[in-house]
Image (cartoon, rainbow, N blue to C red; front, side):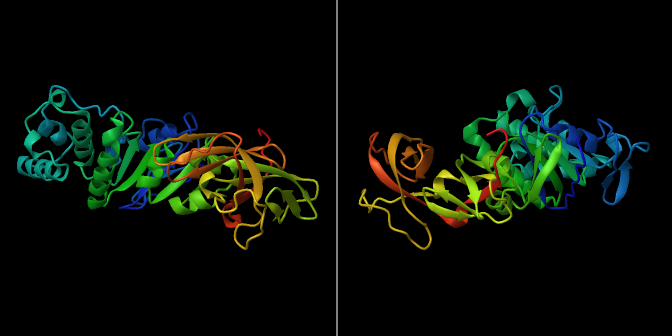
Length: 341
């Protein structure tokens, strides 16, 4: 962990996103007070809760915790599980339990036990229990990973609506880009213990800071080239590479959905266009239908490299079929060549 800085606002969901082992859960445990950081400070509502000397106990930090295993008490009913962390009179506790059960649509489960509920219902009870004491911050560590994939999107959306209605500041840890894009107001992308980029999901996706950031969110194509007089020659024409020295090697990155197959040309030859640049000839290597789209792999005539294109329909051309491809210049990213590539 190195120089990790996060600010989470009420009513906002911030996703700490990154591959396994990059430090996401460790960050959450330090905020919760389960682990102590080596340097730096942690504040909640402007109040210092922890530095390298001073430390407020976890139970006094006004922080809610929700993990993938739910951790419900099996010997307590749903109502008793939710009531467990609430302070106040019996009437206040009962009112809060009823309010939360209504929000999670489980009013009928008040006197049931956790083992009598489905996984999705247990997840909603765990959410209600975590929200019961009205925490300033909700920490969520892969809370949906144990759910059936068919139910996951619905439960995520319902959870998000409840959290927004409570005006809770949420820090959600996940390794799934789709989940972060679906839930987050802001994404902090973490790698090797460092936050490499943060911002709104749209900006993170459309303006990645490097090749690894781009590839974390989707498949990518990499077109390699050498800079000569500020330009790189490719099958699709010249690319301007500002800030790159002559002789430097670069990776031009484009996602498969932004590779255009020119169905009208049918091998008659490349024609330059204003938006798409020059068309490049390629032959089909293989094609697969993967549900909502088809993924077609091409071998480029220019240099023998492989390029993938996705088509939002059933499109399964035979191997060795010649076609012309175009790429949208504004959808390309140019990075210094990555060493691991």
